[in-house]
Figure (cartoon, rainbow, N blue to C red):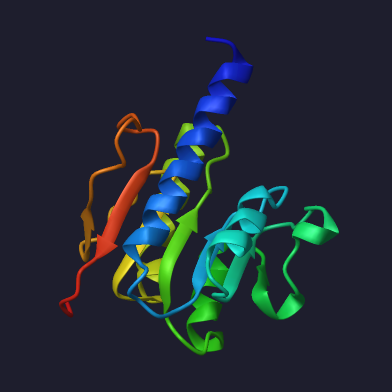
Amino acid sequence: MSRLDSMIRRLTAQRVCIHYALDLISDLNGPILELGLGNGRTYDHLREHSEGREIFVFERSPAAHPSCTPDPQFLFEGDFRETLKRAASDLKSLAAFAHCDIGSGVPENDQVLAGAIGYSLDDLLIPGAVILSDQALHVEQWKAIDLPNGISEGRYFLYRKSEERG
């Protein structure tokens, strides 16, 4: 498969998973967390399809097009391991959905980062929240849920935070 075809397949799967996750949280209140701004495509898509929810973005070094960059009060700039902890005291309400696009293409680094952020991210989510990630996240309070039809296992990871306090 060409790199172009692989990218198209990845982006199509991402869009399908995002819409599926948004449907899963339709009855929940709370903002959205976007981990990894990149060039802002997903952030822009979430703005268009999230029915006016606030979106808080976490990005190490923002470099997106200005039209796809959140206002400063919605942007946490820096390492996820630090900004997620800081956000726990800065956010006014817990989130209903977290989209994590944190992969760097270096599996060893991605696994370390994914292992380091799960519980900090959990502190920012309401019970019943949905988490969609390009990396496997292992948090005791989260239950893996099936991906939408047609999405290959391992392409994305989808979780729901337990409604019970752990």
